[in-house]
Length: 340
Ligand SMILES: [Zn+2]
Ligand SMILES: [Zn+2]
Image 1: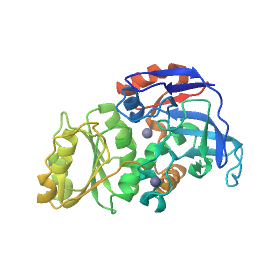
Image 2 (image 1 turned 135 degrees about the horizontal axis):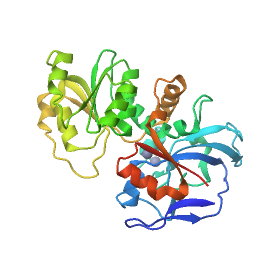
Image 3 (image 1 turned 90 degrees about the horizontal axis):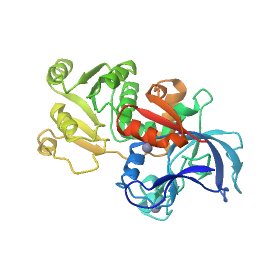
Image 4 (image 1 turned 135 degrees about the vertical axis):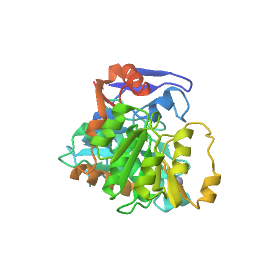
Protein backbone atom coordinates (compact mmCIF):
# COMPACT_ATOMS: atom_id res chain seq x y z
CA UNK A 1 0.00 0.00 0.00
CA UNK A 2 1.01 3.64 -0.48
CA UNK A 3 2.02 5.46 2.72
CA UNK A 4 3.40 8.93 3.37
CA UNK A 5 6.60 8.23 5.31
CA UNK A 6 9.07 10.43 7.17
CA UNK A 7 12.11 8.45 6.08
CA UNK A 8 14.74 10.05 8.33
CA UNK A 9 15.24 13.11 10.55
CA UNK A 10 16.06 16.41 8.83
CA UNK A 11 14.07 18.96 6.84
CA UNK A 12 11.82 17.27 4.25
CA UNK A 13 12.67 13.56 3.95
CA UNK A 14 9.00 12.74 3.36
CA UNK A 15 8.13 10.28 0.59
CA UNK A 16 5.13 8.39 -0.71
CA UNK A 17 6.39 4.81 -0.47
CA UNK A 18 5.08 1.32 -1.08
CA UNK A 19 4.99 -0.39 2.31
CA UNK A 20 3.54 -3.73 3.45
CA UNK A 21 0.00 -3.72 4.86
CA UNK A 22 0.09 -3.95 8.67
CA UNK A 23 -1.37 -6.91 10.58
CA UNK A 24 -3.07 -6.40 13.94
CA UNK A 25 -1.34 -7.96 16.96
CA UNK A 26 -3.10 -8.94 20.20
CA UNK A 27 -5.38 -6.13 21.41
CA UNK A 28 -5.05 -4.26 18.12
CA UNK A 29 -7.35 -3.69 15.17
CA UNK A 30 -6.68 -2.96 11.52
CA UNK A 31 -8.52 0.09 10.20
CA UNK A 32 -9.21 1.12 6.62
CA UNK A 33 -8.61 4.88 6.58
CA UNK A 34 -11.37 7.02 5.04
CA UNK A 35 -9.60 10.35 5.37
CA UNK A 36 -6.77 11.95 7.34
CA UNK A 37 -6.42 15.67 7.93
CA UNK A 38 -3.17 17.64 7.73
CA UNK A 39 -2.26 19.20 11.09
CA UNK A 40 0.25 21.83 12.16
CA UNK A 41 2.25 18.96 13.68
CA UNK A 42 2.70 17.45 10.21
CA UNK A 43 4.16 20.74 9.00
CA UNK A 44 6.50 20.75 12.04
CA UNK A 45 7.51 17.18 11.13
CA UNK A 46 8.23 18.32 7.58
CA UNK A 47 10.53 21.04 8.90
CA UNK A 48 11.96 18.62 11.49
CA UNK A 49 10.84 20.82 14.38
CA UNK A 50 9.01 17.88 15.95
CA UNK A 51 10.35 14.66 17.52
CA UNK A 52 9.89 11.61 15.28
CA UNK A 53 11.09 8.00 15.19
CA UNK A 54 11.65 7.44 11.46
CA UNK A 55 10.94 5.64 9.28
CA UNK A 56 7.35 6.33 10.30
CA UNK A 57 4.08 6.80 8.41
CA UNK A 58 2.66 10.23 9.28
CA UNK A 59 -0.94 11.30 9.95
CA UNK A 60 -3.00 11.30 13.16
CA UNK A 61 -6.32 13.10 12.49
CA UNK A 62 -8.31 10.36 10.82
CA UNK A 63 -11.46 8.29 10.64
CA UNK A 64 -11.93 4.79 9.25
CA UNK A 65 -13.68 1.44 9.21
CA UNK A 66 -12.47 -1.52 11.28
CA UNK A 67 -11.56 -4.34 8.87
CA UNK A 68 -9.70 -6.91 11.01
CA UNK A 69 -9.49 -7.72 14.71
CA UNK A 70 -6.39 -8.85 16.58
CA UNK A 71 -6.54 -11.53 19.27
CA UNK A 72 -8.67 -10.70 22.30
CA UNK A 73 -10.53 -7.67 20.91
CA UNK A 74 -14.17 -7.93 21.93
CA UNK A 75 -15.69 -4.47 22.28
CA UNK A 76 -15.12 -3.48 18.64
CA UNK A 77 -16.43 -5.30 15.55
CA UNK A 78 -15.41 -5.48 11.90
CA UNK A 79 -17.38 -2.79 10.05
CA UNK A 80 -17.43 -0.32 12.98
CA UNK A 81 -16.92 3.31 11.95
CA UNK A 82 -14.23 4.67 14.26
CA UNK A 83 -11.90 7.49 15.21
CA UNK A 84 -8.90 7.03 17.46
CA UNK A 85 -6.92 8.69 20.19
CA UNK A 86 -3.29 9.08 19.29
CA UNK A 87 -1.37 7.27 22.05
CA UNK A 88 0.31 4.41 20.18
CA UNK A 89 2.23 3.33 23.27
CA UNK A 90 2.55 4.48 26.88
CA UNK A 91 4.69 2.91 29.60
CA UNK A 92 1.90 1.85 31.97
CA UNK A 93 4.09 2.31 35.07
CA UNK A 94 4.78 6.04 35.46
CA UNK A 95 2.66 8.17 37.83
CA UNK A 96 0.58 9.52 34.92
CA UNK A 97 -0.12 6.13 33.33
CA UNK A 98 -1.08 4.70 36.72
CA UNK A 99 -3.54 7.58 37.15
CA UNK A 100 -5.09 7.05 33.70
CA UNK A 101 -3.34 10.07 32.17
CA UNK A 102 -1.57 8.10 29.46
CA UNK A 103 -1.76 11.19 27.22
CA UNK A 104 1.00 12.86 29.28
CA UNK A 105 3.19 9.78 29.87
CA UNK A 106 6.79 11.03 29.42
CA UNK A 107 7.65 7.94 27.36
CA UNK A 108 4.50 8.09 25.22
CA UNK A 109 4.69 7.51 21.48
CA UNK A 110 2.22 9.51 19.41
CA UNK A 111 0.51 8.31 16.24
CA UNK A 112 2.20 9.48 13.06
CA UNK A 113 5.42 10.37 14.88
CA UNK A 114 6.44 7.46 17.10
CA UNK A 115 4.16 4.85 15.51
CA UNK A 116 2.78 4.40 11.99
CA UNK A 117 -0.10 6.76 11.27
CA UNK A 118 -3.01 7.27 8.91
CA UNK A 119 -1.59 8.83 5.74
CA UNK A 120 -2.00 5.34 4.21
CA UNK A 121 -4.77 2.91 3.20
CA UNK A 122 -4.52 0.93 6.45
CA UNK A 123 -3.14 1.30 9.94
CA UNK A 124 -3.27 -0.78 13.10
CA UNK A 125 -4.19 0.79 16.42
CA UNK A 126 -4.71 -0.46 19.96
CA UNK A 127 -8.43 -1.19 20.27
CA UNK A 128 -8.66 0.64 23.63
CA UNK A 129 -7.83 3.91 21.84
CA UNK A 130 -10.87 3.76 19.53
CA UNK A 131 -14.12 5.67 19.80
CA UNK A 132 -17.13 4.88 17.65
CA UNK A 133 -18.11 7.59 15.20
CA UNK A 134 -21.83 8.47 15.54
CA UNK A 135 -23.86 7.27 12.53
CA UNK A 136 -24.86 10.80 11.52
CA UNK A 137 -21.27 12.13 11.43
CA UNK A 138 -19.47 11.82 8.10
CA UNK A 139 -15.96 10.39 7.81
CA UNK A 140 -14.33 13.71 6.87
CA UNK A 141 -16.11 15.58 9.68
CA UNK A 142 -15.10 12.73 12.00
CA UNK A 143 -11.44 12.99 10.97
CA UNK A 144 -11.40 16.33 12.79
CA UNK A 145 -12.42 14.78 16.12
CA UNK A 146 -8.77 14.85 17.24
CA UNK A 147 -8.28 18.63 16.96
CA UNK A 148 -11.80 19.15 18.34
CA UNK A 149 -10.92 16.98 21.37
CA UNK A 150 -7.87 19.23 21.94
CA UNK A 151 -10.20 22.26 22.00
CA UNK A 152 -12.68 20.52 24.32
CA UNK A 153 -9.78 19.65 26.63
CA UNK A 154 -8.59 23.27 26.68
CA UNK A 155 -11.96 25.02 26.95
CA UNK A 156 -13.82 22.64 29.29
CA UNK A 157 -11.22 20.63 31.21
CA UNK A 158 -8.61 23.29 31.97
CA UNK A 159 -10.89 26.34 31.78
CA UNK A 160 -14.17 26.92 33.58
CA UNK A 161 -16.60 28.78 31.36
CA UNK A 162 -19.95 29.71 32.91
CA UNK A 163 -23.05 30.69 30.99
CA UNK A 164 -22.99 34.45 30.37
CA UNK A 165 -19.19 34.73 30.45
CA UNK A 166 -17.56 36.87 27.79
CA UNK A 167 -14.83 34.77 26.17
CA UNK A 168 -12.10 36.07 23.88
CA UNK A 169 -10.73 33.55 21.38
CA UNK A 170 -7.54 34.75 19.68
CA UNK A 171 -6.54 33.10 16.39
CA UNK A 172 -8.79 32.30 13.43
CA UNK A 173 -7.12 29.02 12.38
CA UNK A 174 -8.71 25.59 12.74
CA UNK A 175 -8.16 25.46 16.51
CA UNK A 176 -9.65 28.93 17.04
CA UNK A 177 -12.70 28.08 14.90
CA UNK A 178 -13.34 24.87 16.87
CA UNK A 179 -12.61 26.43 20.26
CA UNK A 180 -15.08 29.25 19.70
CA UNK A 181 -17.83 26.69 19.09
CA UNK A 182 -17.01 24.85 22.32
CA UNK A 183 -17.10 28.17 24.23
CA UNK A 184 -20.51 28.90 22.66
CA UNK A 185 -21.69 25.43 23.72
CA UNK A 186 -20.76 26.41 27.31
CA UNK A 187 -23.11 29.41 27.06
CA UNK A 188 -20.54 32.17 26.56
CA UNK A 189 -20.65 35.34 24.48
CA UNK A 190 -17.68 34.86 22.15
CA UNK A 191 -15.41 37.47 20.60
CA UNK A 192 -13.08 36.03 17.95
CA UNK A 193 -9.96 37.99 16.98
CA UNK A 194 -7.79 37.18 13.98
CA UNK A 195 -6.16 38.48 10.83
CA UNK A 196 -7.99 36.69 8.00
CA UNK A 197 -11.33 38.12 6.81
CA UNK A 198 -12.67 34.86 5.28
CA UNK A 199 -11.85 32.89 8.43
CA UNK A 200 -13.44 35.56 10.62
CA UNK A 201 -16.57 35.42 8.44
CA UNK A 202 -16.61 31.64 8.89
CA UNK A 203 -16.19 32.19 12.64
CA UNK A 204 -19.35 34.34 12.63
CA UNK A 205 -21.23 31.62 10.72
CA UNK A 206 -20.06 29.06 13.28
CA UNK A 207 -21.47 31.11 16.14
CA UNK A 208 -18.97 33.81 17.18
CA UNK A 209 -20.99 36.78 18.41
CA UNK A 210 -18.28 39.17 17.24
CA UNK A 211 -15.30 38.61 14.93
CA UNK A 212 -12.68 41.33 14.56
CA UNK A 213 -9.69 41.70 12.28
CA UNK A 214 -7.19 43.15 14.76
CA UNK A 215 -4.91 44.25 11.91
CA UNK A 216 -7.51 46.95 11.24
CA UNK A 217 -9.73 47.15 14.28
CA UNK A 218 -8.94 47.90 17.91
CA UNK A 219 -10.94 45.42 20.05
CA UNK A 220 -10.85 47.40 23.33
CA UNK A 221 -14.01 49.56 22.75
CA UNK A 222 -16.12 46.46 22.02
CA UNK A 223 -14.76 44.55 25.02
CA UNK A 224 -15.35 47.57 27.27
CA UNK A 225 -18.92 47.80 26.05
CA UNK A 226 -19.59 44.07 26.56
CA UNK A 227 -18.03 43.94 30.04
CA UNK A 228 -18.72 47.40 31.50
CA UNK A 229 -15.03 48.14 31.18
CA UNK A 230 -13.85 45.18 33.31
CA UNK A 231 -12.43 43.00 30.53
CA UNK A 232 -13.29 39.49 29.36
CA UNK A 233 -13.82 36.66 31.85
CA UNK A 234 -11.83 34.15 29.83
CA UNK A 235 -9.14 34.21 27.14
CA UNK A 236 -8.46 31.14 25.02
CA UNK A 237 -5.27 31.96 23.11
CA UNK A 238 -5.30 29.80 19.97
CA UNK A 239 -2.89 31.72 17.72
CA UNK A 240 0.42 30.89 19.38
CA UNK A 241 1.70 34.41 18.67
CA UNK A 242 3.13 37.05 21.02
CA UNK A 243 0.76 39.71 19.69
CA UNK A 244 -2.28 37.52 20.43
CA UNK A 245 -0.99 36.48 23.86
CA UNK A 246 -0.36 40.10 24.86
CA UNK A 247 -3.76 41.12 23.50
CA UNK A 248 -5.39 38.45 25.67
CA UNK A 249 -3.45 39.42 28.81
CA UNK A 250 -4.39 43.04 28.16
CA UNK A 251 -8.12 42.39 27.62
CA UNK A 252 -8.76 39.81 30.37
CA UNK A 253 -10.36 41.12 33.57
CA UNK A 254 -8.82 40.94 37.05
CA UNK A 255 -9.08 37.38 38.45
CA UNK A 256 -10.05 36.19 34.98
CA UNK A 257 -8.75 33.07 33.27
CA UNK A 258 -6.16 32.80 30.52
CA UNK A 259 -5.52 29.48 28.75
CA UNK A 260 -2.71 28.99 26.22
CA UNK A 261 -3.72 26.59 23.44
CA UNK A 262 -1.73 27.80 20.41
CA UNK A 263 1.96 27.00 19.99
CA UNK A 264 4.50 29.45 18.63
CA UNK A 265 7.25 26.85 18.24
CA UNK A 266 9.70 29.36 19.78
CA UNK A 267 9.90 31.58 22.90
CA UNK A 268 7.50 34.54 22.94
CA UNK A 269 7.95 37.96 24.54
CA UNK A 270 4.88 38.42 26.77
CA UNK A 271 4.18 40.57 29.82
CA UNK A 272 3.89 38.04 32.66
CA UNK A 273 3.55 40.89 35.20
CA UNK A 274 -0.08 41.07 34.14
CA UNK A 275 -0.66 37.57 35.56
CA UNK A 276 0.42 38.89 38.97
CA UNK A 277 -1.19 42.34 38.74
CA UNK A 278 -4.52 40.92 37.61
CA UNK A 279 -4.35 37.78 39.80
CA UNK A 280 -5.11 35.61 36.78
CA UNK A 281 -5.69 31.88 36.67
CA UNK A 282 -3.41 30.65 33.91
CA UNK A 283 -3.52 27.23 32.29
CA UNK A 284 -1.96 25.47 29.34
CA UNK A 285 -3.49 22.71 27.29
CA UNK A 286 -1.87 20.39 24.78
CA UNK A 287 -3.28 16.90 24.20
CA UNK A 288 -6.65 15.40 25.05
CA UNK A 289 -7.94 12.64 27.29
CA UNK A 290 -10.70 10.01 26.97
CA UNK A 291 -13.35 12.39 28.30
CA UNK A 292 -12.39 15.09 25.75
CA UNK A 293 -13.00 12.60 22.93
CA UNK A 294 -16.36 11.48 24.27
CA UNK A 295 -17.56 15.06 24.68
CA UNK A 296 -16.20 16.04 21.23
CA UNK A 297 -18.16 13.17 19.66
CA UNK A 298 -21.35 14.22 21.46
CA UNK A 299 -20.94 17.76 20.17
CA UNK A 300 -20.53 16.40 16.62
CA UNK A 301 -23.50 14.03 16.97
CA UNK A 302 -25.77 16.80 18.28
CA UNK A 303 -24.55 19.34 15.73
CA UNK A 304 -23.45 21.68 18.54
CA UNK A 305 -20.01 21.86 16.91
CA UNK A 306 -19.48 21.67 13.16
CA UNK A 307 -16.17 20.55 11.68
CA UNK A 308 -17.33 20.20 8.05
CA UNK A 309 -17.16 23.93 7.18
CA UNK A 310 -13.46 23.95 8.14
CA UNK A 311 -12.59 21.43 5.43
CA UNK A 312 -11.65 23.46 2.38
CA UNK A 313 -9.77 20.85 0.34
CA UNK A 314 -9.89 17.07 -0.11
CA UNK A 315 -7.00 15.57 -2.10
CA UNK A 316 -5.68 12.10 -2.86
CA UNK A 317 -2.60 11.11 -0.87
CA UNK A 318 -0.40 11.39 -4.01
CA UNK A 319 -1.07 15.16 -3.99
CA UNK A 320 0.25 15.56 -0.44
CA UNK A 321 2.76 18.25 -1.44
CA UNK A 322 -0.05 20.42 -2.74
CA UNK A 323 -2.06 19.77 0.42
CA UNK A 324 0.85 20.66 2.71
CA UNK A 325 1.49 23.87 0.71
CA UNK A 326 -2.20 24.91 0.82
CA UNK A 327 -2.27 24.33 4.57
CA UNK A 328 1.02 26.00 5.36
CA UNK A 329 0.28 28.95 3.05
CA UNK A 330 -3.11 29.34 4.78
CA UNK A 331 -4.96 29.14 1.46
CA UNK A 332 -6.89 26.24 2.96
CA UNK A 333 -8.17 25.83 6.52
CA UNK A 334 -8.24 22.04 6.92
CA UNK A 335 -7.04 19.68 4.16
CA UNK A 336 -8.08 16.02 4.07
CA UNK A 337 -5.90 13.47 2.27
CA UNK A 338 -7.62 10.29 1.10
CA UNK A 339 -5.82 6.96 0.63
CA UNK A 340 -5.27 5.40 -2.77
ZN1 LIG B 1 -3.30 17.31 15.11
ZN1 LIG C 1 3.74 6.27 31.47
